[in-house]
Image: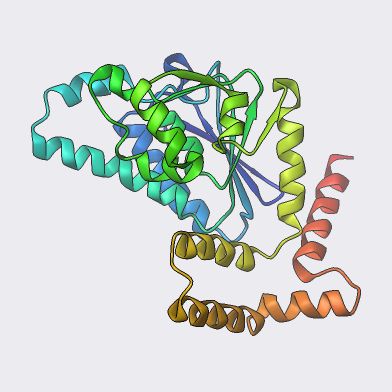
Length: 274
């Protein structure tokens, strides 16, 4: 049971709404724990094929809740480390979730909110969204979100925005690679539905393995060990149930099992609404 999130699951898609709109979805100990538990559960749910992470109200996520920050100011070094590990675990849980995760970004994404964009596989932002890595203004650094943000925007952009704490618009976030696509706010959901439509055509097992492939190969030297690793991975996926089914469906010019199952489920849903 979560008190900070609103979760809807339909047609194999889970939409996780951060629902602390009165504080612009800033997070605290409770929402961090809720996000961690929710993504662990959705990652293990065989009926969920994709996840959308969104924010209710005027902002995607404004970073850290002020009340939480006040409590942190009184923590010892050890208490701060334990507190930061909870946040780091939440970020890693979303990043390593075996299901594809799409960030639906509108309004402000500040500080840790930028981290919640970077840990997602795909980020779609409203064209009027605003971003800011504001930590240095407070005498802090974007440490726990850093590994994901640097991978998303690159070291050159990170050097600038980590240091200056400047606000930057969605167009700049797109230019530097933090977000993958832009849309007017009124068309944000339509753009995300296009992506979900593409994801539903894929094998859930293959998507999970593709996510792991990107994580494991990024930055590694192309040496004998890497070549052997990739050969082993393709051999394993070819002989998996989904690998065999997908290739046979292609050769036999028919729909794969997962596409047929999804279309049948969607048709049942349409019939029930009539």
